[in-house]
Image (cartoon, rainbow, N blue to C red; front, side, top):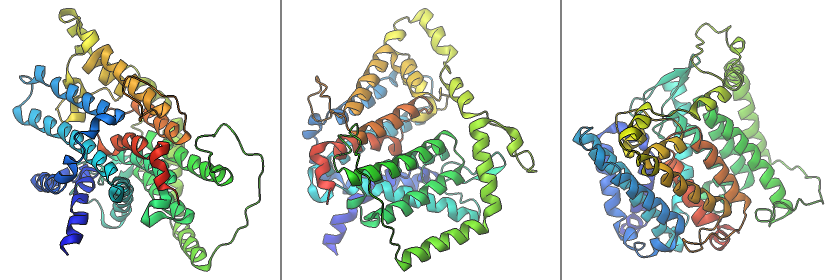
Length: 440
């Protein structure tokens, strides 16, 4: 029993940090988090020297330290408890990076974090479906809401928008390492897993996150198809295999029964599914006629394109006013207060990570972000921090592209565990050296 406890006790930390929606529990959540950090302390000690060898981890830690320093000018603008909460939240990300790197050093723990990530996305999806039967569950930090007249149920993610984003990331991550994940080892189980969380994203009614989740799902199916014909497709994706073979379809009776049950369930909810489909098309096109026949429909949203254009120029007037007296802010930024609610401060933010970083950390902050994104795209996380080693890999490119798009449409993407972890996944699993461990 003791050995079993030691083996799984440190799993509490990633499970909790991937479930920030449980902050609605208040003190209980933070107490459990403190206990979890205590249990994983030996793992944290394993990596404090090696953290400097992981380029991406080191850059993220530097970014969080800069953000902490950027809070100092705002100490007199906010209540002490808000400042302390921000420090704790940012500090947790630094601890999490140490934890993820500690797991990487131990072969038996190398898959721990990715398993927790995928499992939490699955459980969060299940909570959304469950609430269609039970009604809203009030333990989550984000309250129940509606969009276009349809319910938006809260879940473990702490944000309905971030939940759909985590679905897109989970689809990509599971595609690249499913053979080493206990509960989705086969292609069929992977398909069921991805379909389950994708349907939950549809039920969640997030716009950009849902659209990207659908694209990620289609990419996943295509990737697996080509990878089956060419095992090196991830690194040689520009070499399209020319030899195609027809797939012989053999469906076991059990699988056929499961799919038949799913089809029956979907047909029984045909009217609801039709409305969801029309609503999603309304989100993309802005055509109100699609849902105007429903009595409780609301039209609070613009189409995705119009919303994105708005978020590309959502600057703070306060920031530009500050340049009159503090012109150096153009280089160094006006402080971390411009990250606003994404780090727990009671003030608005721009809904665009590039604008947030520019206002908070200036031109130097933007240069830092672009350098980090370059590393992600080129998959050069094993080279020294002063060098970028070009090594294109479709797995790295797909996750990096998703992250880049989300930066233009979402604030706080660097301040949410479900959106930070995919960067560490690129570092720890997508590099050729480490990814070999994930193959059969």
